[in-house]
Structures are given as structure tokens and as C-alpha cells.
Length: 154
Length: 232
Image (tube, rainbow over all chains, first blue to last red; front, side):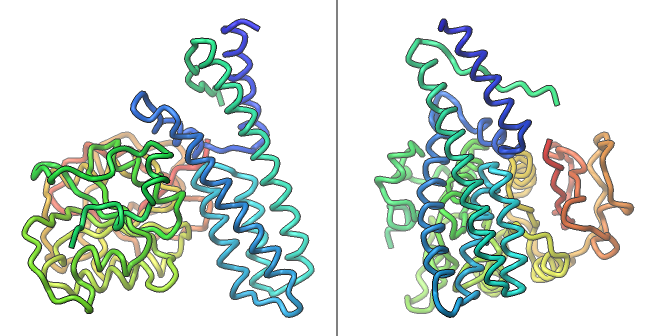
């Protein structure tokens, strides 16, 4: 695949993530913060997000797995994940966290278990997609090309 | 107190270098450069806010808690009050929801201090709760930003800092201010103007940004609801 094709693939792939609602405009905000002085800013922040989220999801599984669920422990975790996913533009993860928090408030253990599954699903989805996106970017850079600016017509 | 080493900015050296955030040890503060103290318990948010501020030419110290912030400012009670002649903080921006000390509590402590009560304090929150916003403004917060914070928000903060680095705390927290002279966007859904935050009725998803007001020629600090644009 030549450079131009790769760049087009990247653009199309990125667009699809927005169209599917996996990413929202906050991701574009992050891209605006990337420049020659900080060429890997987005992937670095996202990597931190992954590390943070892995930890939180682990803690959540533990907390929800207790005999008696302490919602005072569960809710702050979900709040944290909601915040960080919102900050990087992982819209569906954020939305799943919003639902999760509502059930935390109601102290509905079963619903919370379902929510955790949903959050995990959305998280793994965005993780997978972003990792693919970064790989595409790396291929372009390795071929001596530049990452095209995202142009969204919607 | 070595206020500018990596120990205060709560990113470990390896983290900061790993993410290429830039120089770790700040050179002596250029007196013309705006220095911002950013407080947020979320690592991801700290990194983003730090980058947002740096890209608008601010010098940034990022800490992960209210206690660390007070420590940095020399306001914590354990230490004797020391005069930090060179400690220049032009703006403090803090998250609201933090474990231990909330941003609101930090705000109060700053406004109670003699050395830093004139420093503008901006609160950030992911939750759009009117009573929360009101409470912060009443306590002397300069501004309230809804998370996720955007470049336009930071640019706007920056603009009123260059105009007036030390904001005079005149106790008049609800000064009505003329909205910036820019075209209003089509999607503005609030029925009232932004001068009086009392009469605005909002729900979580219907706030819109009135403008990119970074060039607003205001004389007084604006104390108004910050609106966020709807995601594209």
C-alpha cells in the first residue's frame, strides 16, 4: 500500500470511529494539542488512560465481587473512569459509566454487575480501535509520511 | 522548599519523560510568564490540563491533591510560614471532586490566606450542578469550567490573565458583565443572558458555548456560568 493509500485508510478509519460514536470531539481536542514538540501526545495520554482504566476495572471487579458490596467504594471508581474516558473522548465508555453510576446510586448490585460488563465491553472496543489507529499512524510515519489532519465533514 | 523539582509536580520523572511532557526542572521563573498551579487527582486530566496550559504559554506546576497544593503554596499548617519571594502563582485551577480535600475546600483555604487570596482560582468539574457552581462563585472562584476542558476554555482564562495578572478581589462576585462582542452560535439553548447565573435553567446536556471569547476586552473578571459546546 502506498503512502497516499495509507493516509486515506487512516482518515477513513478515524472517521468511522466518530461515526460509530466510539470517539467524540474531545479526541479532536487532544489531537489539537499534538505538534512537532509533542508528536506523540495523543498516544501517550491514551496509553496512560489504558493503564489507569485497567487498574480501575480491576478494582471494580473486586469491589463488586464482595459478599457485601460497598457502593461508597464502587462509585468513586466509576466516577474516575467516567472522568478519564470523557477527557480523552471515549464517548461510549463515558456513557456506560453514567448508566453505571445511576445504578450505584440505587445500590442495585445486579444491575451494577451488568453495567460493569457493559463498561468493559466498550472499553475493550475503544482500546482495540485506538491501538489499530496508532498502528496505522506508525506505519505512515515509518514510510516517511505525515499524519493527515482529521477533517470531519459532520 | 524545593518547589520546582519533580517531587511537587506529581508525575514521576519516568512518567513525564515517557510522555515527553517537556522540561522537568523549570528554569527560574520568567517574571513575565504566567505561572499556573493545576490541581487534579486524575493523572489523565493532569496531563491534559498541563498540556493545554503549556500550549498557551503558561508555566505549569501540576499537583494531585489539595494538600499538595497548599504545601506548594506554603499554606500547610505543619510548616512555619515562610516568605516565598519568588513564588509567583498567577492562577490556580483545580478540580472540584477530589478525595480528601475538595476543590471547594481548597478554594476557601486560598481565599482565607493573606498571600494568595488575590490569586484567581478556577474550578473544574465534570458535573454541571448549579448549586455547586453558585457556591464556588460565592466563595470567590473566578470561573467554573465544565470538564472535559477544551483549548478554547484555557485560551479564555489566559486572555483575562494577561490583561490583569492580579485580579482585585473586590467582593462583588456577581458583577454583571457585557457578553463578549462576538456572533452568538445558532445552538444557544439558554433563554437568559449569561450575566446572571441565578436565572438560568439548565440540564446536563443542553449547555452551549456562547463564543470563543478569548479576545474579550473586559475590564472586570467575569463571573459567569461557563458553557460547553455540544460535541460535534
